[in-house]
Length: 131
Image (cartoon, rainbow, N blue to C red; front, top):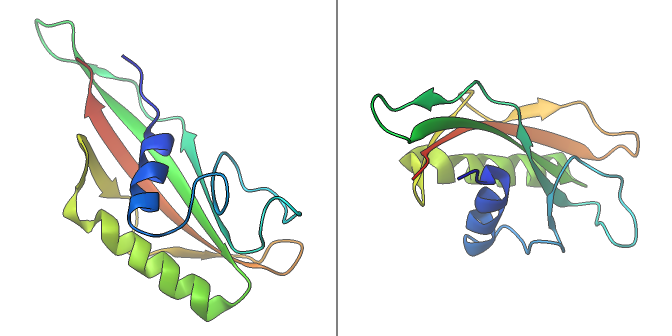
């Protein structure tokens, strides 16, 4: 069964106090700050991962979800602290029944957006086995 790694990771981050889905945590690509989307927000979306690996002799497969998390902040230091704390949440390697692996050794500082807001990126491999 296909799953939504970005949605599951957003729910995990909400339980850890990084925001509320639909209020400050958003599924999908980064969007400009508006009345409904605050300047400081987190955007989580799925990227195409590699092809699934079939488990030999079974009707299950391992799927390799790629997830990008973009942390946007009005202050560089606040965004950096949040991104690093969030990055550490993934160091245990598991979120539910996902096996997560960071794709870099620290959050990446991205260029500011057109409004001058600071942005940081965390890229995850979120693999899981279908049942």
